Length: 246
Image (cartoon, rainbow, N blue to C red; front, side, top):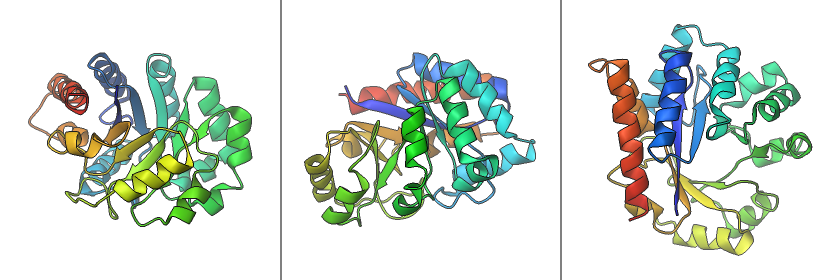
């Protein structure tokens, strides 16, 4: 059974909304949830997720909002924190990892923390048994992949193309996937540009998909009520889960 990881911007429009949305997505078949930590300069994210980040910050997002949402949902669904390194560094990395562990959060996804810089913090992740998710890009060589993935945990985040999330691009990934399979048995999840239309094709040689912008577009639709947003996003999650396993 291929897995679905859903990305949601935390506490937009409110903490209560995020909690209700996560639980609805779980009920429709979402296997894991990425709670996005709003940040002013999300370099790997496209304009859709960037807009949600800005709106969440304008509403006064605080790190404690992430903690409160996680406390409510992590016992119900596999929960990850997706954020840029600056907020984690300012809060102190060990404190963040310890808080994740205490709340039952399974891993952190930090797209702007290169492998070499992450080495300093890996002993802390290992100590607290919280995964630091590794990224592989289509441009990575076999040697680079072997280096990055020698201690991989939970799953590999395969970036579908070079660029930002939400773009509609395609790259040939068979050689990259083969190189990963030759290196580790850790599952491969593909992200960037995964939506209802592309999910089946992107998922065919991997173990799961990460979907973000497709959900956030609905989240940002001002013509919908909050209950309609929850219904549409969770329904879409169920449809994508069915598509990738059909």
